[in-house]
Structures are given as C-alpha cells and as structure tokens.
Length: 341
Image (cartoon, rainbow, N blue to C red; front, side):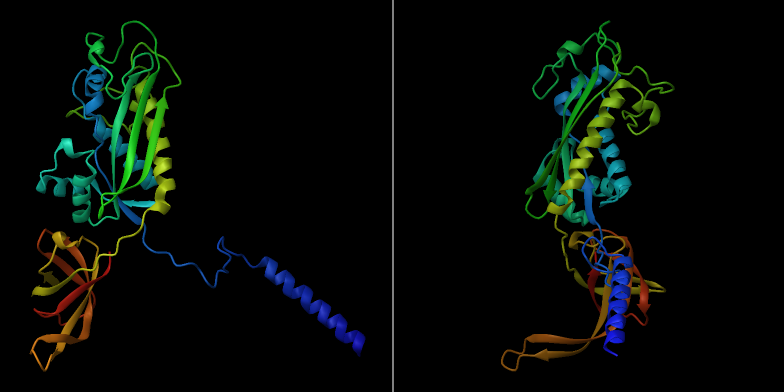
C-alpha cells in the first residue's frame, strides 16, 4: 500500500510540473488569466521644427525658402505612428489651435509657448525641436555657422566637388504643465553616397510645391540630402521612443452641465479651453437633492443619480457636442464629468 501511494504521488508531481512549464507566462511573471492592465497610449503633439539657424543653407539647397522644419516634423510623426508607442495628435487638429492662438514660427522652439498649446490639445507632452545642421560635410553649417558662402553654388549644388550630405536635429519632450524638459533626443544623419548636388540621385523626384518638401516620399529619400534627413530623424525617433517611460499621463477632470439636447446630440457648456477634445467620454448625472449647511444655508453637497454616458464628437473653445454611449432622457442642467481622456 505504501509503495502504491509513493508511486501515485511522484506521478502527480510530474504531471503538475509539466503543466506549469507548458503554461505561457508574461514578461511580468503573470499568467494569461491575469493580464496586466493596458491603459491608453501616452499622447504627444509634435510642433514644426525650428530651422532659423540653417535657413540660408536650406534656401541654397532648394533654390527657395522651403519649410524644412515642417518636413522634419511630418517625418517624425510618421515614424512615431508606425512605432505605436505614442498616440500622436493629427496635424489638422494642431493647425486649427495654432491658428486660433496666433502661434508664430518664432515660437516653434519655445517650450513655454508650446506648453500652453499642449494644454488646449489635451496631450500628455509636446515635442519641440530644432535643425542645427543642414548641408554638406565639407562646410560647417552648425548653429552660428555662416551660410553666406552657399550663394552662387547653384540649385542643390556646391561647385564641382563631390560631397556627402549631413543633417543634425535635436528634440525635447516637454511637460505641458511645468514646461520642464523631461527628455532630449538627437539625430545625426549622413549620406552614404557623394554627389556634386545634394539633390542628386533622386530618380523620379521632381521638386516641391508650396514651399514644402515631402520628406517621406521614396523619391526624395533617394536623394543624398533625403538619405541624410531620414537617417537623422530615425535616430531621433528611437531616442524619443526610449524616453516614453519618463512621461507621465495627465489626468484632467473636466466638469460642466448639459446646455441643450437636440435629438440625439447633447450640447455641453464646456469645451477645449477646459481640456475637452473629440473622443472624450463623460458621465451624465442628475442632481436629485441639495444638502445645505444649516448655519449658512450654503450648498455643501449635491446628491445625484446616473443618467448615462456620452462621447464627444465635436469640440470648440467653449462648448462640446456628444452622442449617447449609454442611457437616455438627458436634460438641460444635468451635470457632466470626464471619465476618459
């Protein structure tokens, strides 16, 4: 009897061990039955990079003043979206707020000015940056470097000497509440090829329009300056992604009331200035009783009952419009409060 007992115990232990080894375990040491909580991605807004210090160099390359700061920003947006670590605000939403706030090109590298815009956009942080070197490798075009010598070199060229293209960019991850710099990133790119023209090797690339260049196009990236830009932005993107852990998600609680109910739309008396944005969800509560201080008569608490939840579909500075996610019978005067941002 004793022998049978011990054989049974050994077999049971062996089976239990095999099952434990076959069960997948996450990197945090938890089994699939207890997944780690996945919150929303950290949101950032990317401002067009400042290129004032290399403007003359850029004009010499393209033959006109091209906003290479916008091109760098667009390329960075593409890299971060493809990576998926951050949620990046769309340019249309940014441009609208920037226009309303009279945000100028001179404010691009200003952390304080950009932080104010970041609050209106409802992001966790903003990314501002500068282009500090742009041109060829045999001419110093760093901050303070003279670009005057580029005059007369011809469109995208530098006399008859072959040279590599080079681009250096710097970025800062800025806290929108304190304007504190939470992370920095640098990218330096150099073409692997040489040419007598920085715009050489572009295949079917045929220029630009409206003072801007699509730095993300495959044809432009085949030019030697495009190759240098792409390498610089990739390196900078990697460092910004690595800085993700330094960024804390902001929790902004916005409260207001229902101002109107029109069919299936619920209009609120608060908007972007309070921190709301399209996609936010808010709870709707109805005040059922007010508790007053017996001594002063002041309201010290309002008792409420839930009415439902709405999701915002349109937001301006002072109002917002939402549609029901749950609940019904929304009324003017109902209290609203954000539950997701």
